[in-house]
Length: 94
Length: 329
Image 1 (cartoon, rainbow over the protein chains, first blue to last red):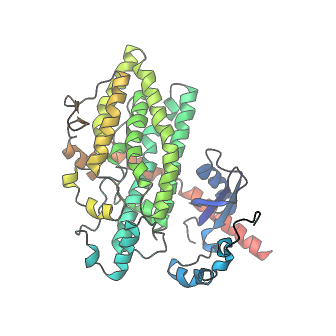
Image 2: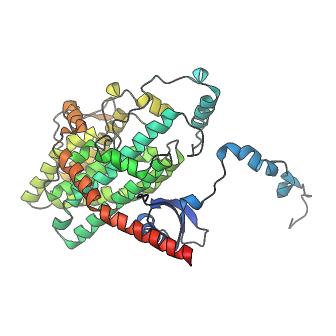
Image 3: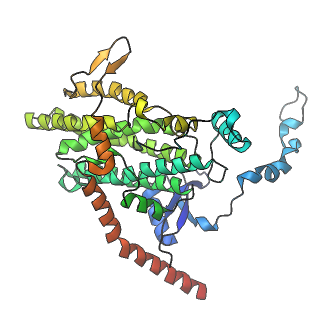
């Protein structure tokens, strides 16, 4: 039996209706303890309204060395940005 | 400071021209102020030095709970006790943020604890001094946390992403620590004669160990150059020590306390206070394990870990049993 408690990643939703944001990680034997520990470790000063914990092993991450090919498809589609289309200056509301 | 004597590669810093392309690209990212993230390529020396530095810092936070924990049950009022508890809990949190940052570099939490418990890893020399009277708790917050802030504020800009983010969290919480300490010092220094004597006594004993927190003098600090090139150290030991003295002398004057160094004097020409060196022989002895409380501190830490083993194992066994039961459903 592996004795070290598994690693959990902690996400907190702050006060102003924003999305949950990664704040750090911690070790805990299960999800219930991970949630309680996350409260003590990451919200001692009213930082959050809601906590998510996810086992770090369950996260699939992209590799920084592949960031070229991974993000390349969005590089050549400048027309996705509104500034691609010059508009007549005298017009309003565009 | 919390990481006082971090060994780096020991080799001279390479120029960009001397580096292989991969290392050169890495150094150029650092020079451009980019953050390095755990999965990025990094030189082995960078990884190893960072593991040493971050874990030393984490160990200091954890061991740092012990001198203050000593006073939780003896705090003079319920309010002071609640405040001290909250502060000590913060230190535990700071240790946890930092351990997690170190673990992103591929070392496990159990390995890090093992290094601390076996004496292989160091923690700050300051925590090997005893806290003998209540004013010591004031002096620790004022001087020790004050010195820590001096070092940690620039480290928010360090090149390694997880370390930088941990430092940002820590700095947000640290100013409470320093202020609660100074608040205790004001109460004591402006109290009756006996209280004032206790405050002066605490300053006398913590002044020199606080100066030692910044590590050896620059001329004896062999590993600084590489760490500074990698931006895992942002200021030299002597720069930070001077800054600390400049900030602290007027604070002591306000309290009506005397810095236990007759050479402390404003130097108009330099625009800084002059001050004497701490006893470096004592510093190296404490680092080697021969300070007044090294054995007690490490002993208490190892005992807490060993005594908690049945509890950690029990929770793990419980979790595994339930995971199996859930899978069978």
